[in-house]
Image (cartoon, rainbow, N blue to C red; front, side, top):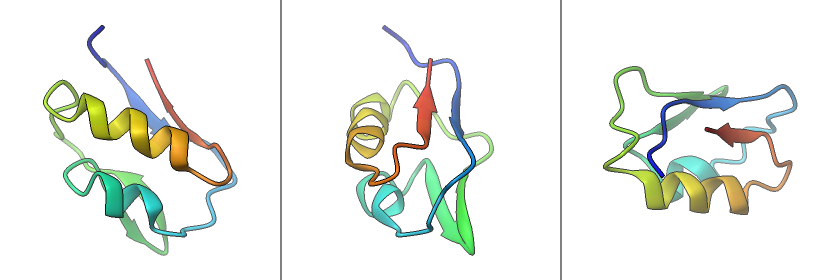
Length: 62
């Protein structure tokens, strides 16, 4: 399965877990955001791990 889209829903607490796990896709500056132009397929494993580890479960992908 290739990841086509990654987003962060409302409720992010900017804990930095996603950036620690997958710094090529996520950056936390006040709140977490997805880096524009990030290669989702190359980072599929860490995107899934970041979504699983997110304490407020706001990282989504499809």
